Image: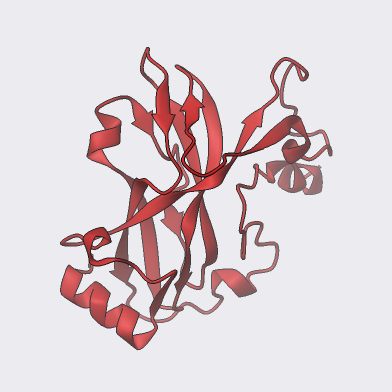
Length: 192
């Protein structure tokens, strides 16, 4: 069941959902919480690397360049480009609550997508959310750190999970505080 604003507030008060820094009231919707865009981005250096080989043990992060945007300046997302970004807020979930990252309609209407597939945040998650930004439109879009970029909805599980994400062997992204590239190569190298 998706939590309402009343339940989200109650879960925050009880510590079942922890969001830092503390949210201003305008970030709480009727069944979601808006998160803001951080100032760190990772972009593929496609002019230096011809392709991504998932069997290559080279970390995908090494194929990317980190960009830190100064205060009050935009990150320009070019048409048909892809970038990883991070939220300003850190999210921690109890062992019986899951989160779902959702795009914002106002951004979708200008072609900005905030996640491709990674919308589920497992019970026991702790860290900042990495955003998979894409510009599907034909015009560049200026994205400003601090703007509301995505929303989270939350669901109550029927019981606490046996192994929360933070304790799962091989979890790849727990505690992240910067936009981390895919660590899929570590999976494929083990499956050989």
